[in-house]
Each structure stands twice: as C-alpha cells, then as structure tokens.
Image (cartoon, rainbow, N blue to C red):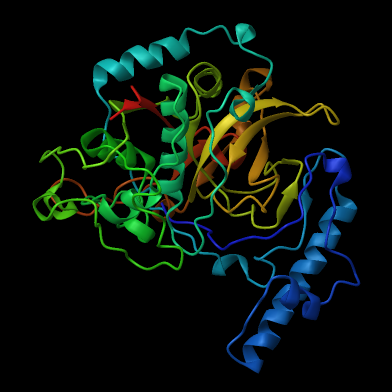
Length: 404
C-alpha cells in the first residue's frame, strides 16, 4: 500500500470549536511559502504552484463557510500547493491478500467477535488513554510506507497490551527487509505492501526497535536491509522458506486475523475488546482535513489507497455524531494531533444498509496482489467498500503479540 505522504504542518486543537485556522482571504501565497518552507525549481513552477494554492484556498474557504455544525473543517497545510492527482497514491488491491492467518486462530477470534452483544461494549474507546499502550504519531514523509507504519503502530500497542512493555518498533525493518513476491499492495518498500504481509513477516522474524534500525526512507529511497545476515536476506525469504528470528528483535507475533469484510459489528468489537486494528481506507479527500468528523457520504466512489490504525470510537459531545478514531502517519501536526475522526454509522439503523457502501472502481490502487503464486497476473475487479472512507472493507488484527 502506497500513499499520501508529505510532511504536514497544521495548527491543531482538540475541540473543533477552538480550532485556529490559517485560511483567510488575507492569507497569501508568499506567506504560505514562508510558513511551510517551500522551495520551487523555477519561476514557472512558482507560478504554477501559486495557481494551485489559490484554487485550494478558495475551496477551503468555501467549504468552511458553508459547512454545517456537524461537518469537519479544512485548512491550509503542506498539501495546499498540490493537485489531488499529484498526491502520491497507489496501493494495489486487485484481489484479496493472498497471505492468510492460522485458520484455528482466525476461526476462534472471529467467532468471539461475532458473538458479542454490542450493547455490552463501552460507549467509547480510546486506546491512547487506556494505560501506556500507544506511541507518538509518526510521519512517513515521501515514502509509500503507510502499510509499514500501520503494521508497526498496531504491533506496538498489542505488545504493550499483552506484556506491559511499550516499544517504539522499527518501521524501517519492514520497509527494507520484507519481501513481497506476489506484489500485494505494491512491489514492496516505498512502493507499497499490506499489513497482512507485515504481520506475517514479523511472525517469522520478529521486530527490532527503532534505535536498532531507524527510519531512513523518508525521501522515498530504498535502504538496504542491514539487520539480517546475508543468508537470511529478504531474497531468501519468499513464502514458505526460512523463519529465522532477526538478532536483537524485541517483539513478535503468532500471526494475524482478517476480520469479516464490511462488517460493522466485528470491527467495533475488535477495537473495543482486543486493541487497535490495522485498516485500509480511501484517504483521497483527507489532505486538507483539520478537525471535526469527516463524512464522505456524498462521494460517488471510494478508492482504497491508504493504511492507518483504528484506535477507538466514541460520540462527539458537541454534535452528537458517532465517530471512529483513526491514527494516521502524516505526523502529529496534521489533523487532530495526527488523528482523524470518521463518521461512524451502524448499518442496522439504516433503512437500506447498502446505502453506506460504495464501489471501489480503481482496484489497481489497493490492498491485494497483482500476481498469483505462479507469477500470473490477476485481473482487477471492482469491489464494494462500506463505512466512511471504506473503513469496514479490509481490517486486520495481530494474534498472539509477545516479547521475542
């Protein structure tokens, strides 16, 4: 999975009512260049970016002035001089992920989620406040490594929940060392992969901490895997081969489990009872998000193109709207301290539950594999994705997180 990755710098406040916005009729492109330390290669590019900026500024002002009290805010940020199609996208989901979890674990886990009475679940969940089980929000920068950040953040929390020890784990390990022979979610590294592949790799090799192999791919470059022996390199770890633990690894996992596709109850129960969940979303409209509850119900389609982490849910005190609490990997200065709240709709309350679903008609941007085990190409098919930003479509939890 690739995705939108530039560093973002926003003024953020927890309460929507107290948000401080940069955007105004007086805010100039010259000020924007200074505020965000922008550099352009020529006068021609400067003029081009100024034009795009002015279009985005007009859009932000129009959105904010016409929004009702339940809608999210938009504001100036590091994306404001770019067109939508310039944002780095790509997360190949042309078929469902070929990697699967241990079936006994998967069946037991899914059965538990499906049997839960939702009325007995907490009214709200926020794993950031549930003991010391989440690390600081990170920034993937110019690398399509959202899949690695989502996998790592999810692992950090599950290890902490199970053992009481909170590590900052190495994203770079997954970006540099994990193979992707079936081209699931991309071709690997900064060119994309999936959380399923990430958890599978961790189960075989463990994870080192950030201090052992720090993040170096922020500019999109390929960094060699330096924590595995030559005979243990990622070229020799194509499915079904060696499972040697990496020297110095501090955490691992038994496997992973995909939750049922497009099932609200299972996702709600999983994040409430088990912990954070790695999810795939359509984040195309997230670039200028600044705060509040994001709702994409008026969009025609949803393009699953980004991996993030679901860390809770709740109900907004000001608007009464239910929401999902989602951790992004665009740095803590984006959105609400690095998080976005997505509108949460229980389909059982809808006259037509299918109305909360839309088609993803660009299956070459998503969560799965472009080749089968024999190396043959897989023909993309459109898929139905449900929930705001398609949050219910592809969801996965690690199973059996433990110290290495």
